[in-house]
Length: 207
Image (tube, rainbow, N blue to C red; front, side, top):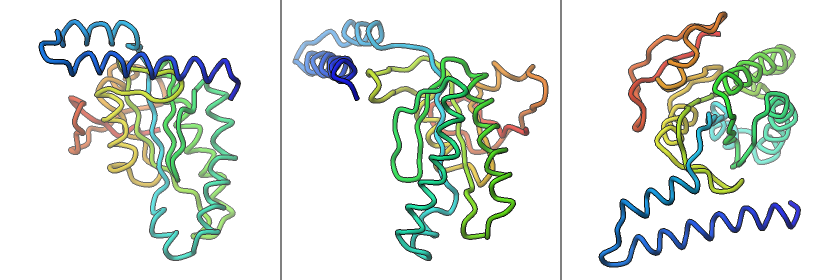
């Protein structure tokens, strides 16, 4: 990361830390400080969380080298798709990715491209070498702290959908995403019973 980017990211985090410290003081006007925080960092983004299905079980069964191989392959296959759909990969932790997109359409298009790419990849792979992806997508106003992290109800909901609820090959979306894209040709939405905190509804994207 260049020095300029480091300064930009660190400056955002430091400003937020100072405002949170102000908020903690006795008698602080929390509503006013909250408004300042949202004014500084509030932005509208789509957020995508990906996770690899059955990953922990495979690590236990096949070992750390298999873990590294699967991580490498998922990055090699998926990161170019993120770039092609104008996504910003904010974070990778183990087998999970957190990605943001300015438009929900681009987020969903990228998720579909990821699943189709892995379907083709898996056709010639043994069962233990298949890369099986789970995806959760949210959209709305969130706090973006430089290129370091994002926070908000839709972030939490997308994380829950992608990392905990979705099964292999599934793309799950919040109600906010469905409302924006339900007229998009080529896809439809099926409601699911597991509605994560922060979302009013959740749906399986049929692609």
